[in-house]
Figure 1 (tube, rainbow over the protein chains, first blue to last red):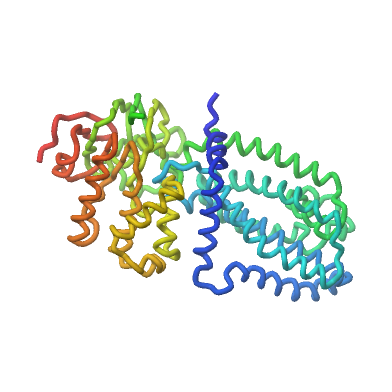
Figure 2 (cartoon, chains in turn blue, yellow):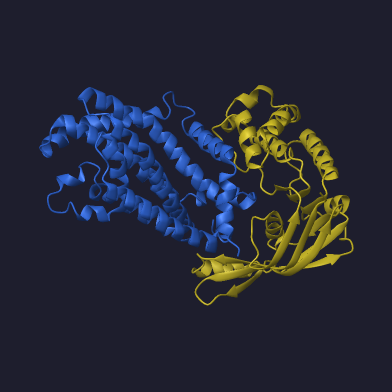
Length: 260
Length: 240
């Protein structure tokens, strides 16, 4: 049995230092001429939190001390997921030069993308804890459950990016489709609000995979116990989606060099 | 381990997806020297770049690929390198492969020369120890001096080429695949580049070189493959 996609992924993860170096040097290159570098993302989020926090907490008639930390977490997580997904559609096409000239595993570019956004979100996380400390949002043992939640989300983003990368390489319209849908999806996902704030569609919001991915990290961040079903949903997504992505990658990874 | 590279009935077909427009089709047909264009079941056009190609290369073989633009030389090199997987047939390869197809793969204009040396070398599969050893030698060869600490975007195109060439030729492969790449930079650098390339060619087990220049091919190679419409014929010696 030959599984070129699987051996490609194994080859990628056998060389973690290459993933790390490429992700790190990408970030360095992007912020080379700026003094604050990736901290600009943090500043941007901070402005968003302060500005939106006051307006939206009034609009939603919510207590600022609980709403603003939840908004901060929501914005940080959304930025992480949305930018990863938005960039995933061009993950192979933007690396066409490398793909066409070197015999490197293709999933390297996907792993590099996920790691780059993990480094970016790491710049943002302190902002949440500052907000949480100021407003007295609880930080307790539940908070530790952020770690397994985050790992599940990164795993899910990996297979989503792999599929989107292949789709984007084969169908060039896909990139624009995703870029169009993502901002809309922000309002359909519990970013600015918590799912339990929806009186009627609170049940249906869980049909949105991104809602499950946000909440599995946000509820422990806010010191709440994580509902067990979120682990089931995220774990199930990882298994089914991962298998689907692997099947697609096995079938098509040899063709990607011709597409880009 | 001795280098070995064998093609067994290899066929490579390119799908061209965005060729609904007549202009591109006409354009492809006009390149009469190019590969064969076939119609697939759907609207996808297939270009057969290599058709049932078989050969075996052993340690000590230096092969010149000759043919017109679009005859399949670059496709052949990419297939040898493992970038393109054959649709039919098999490619067998033992030994560490290095490719000099397009210069500057993975180069980032914002990063400094030193950072780019590390970045490009890592992509070529070199270890940290090897990169450290090479960096000194690349420094000397390129004579870029303190410019290596500045971003590559500040380089003249000649300086950037020196850096790209130096990194690309800093590996120690068993199989070396080179696409037309002599004659870069100013006259003085060309002499040095030629010397460095010749040293590298002498050190490898198998060398494959694609070029339009029959003279260069005759100088460096002991076997000659002519590519025409995706088929390969081994010939005695190309005319000068």
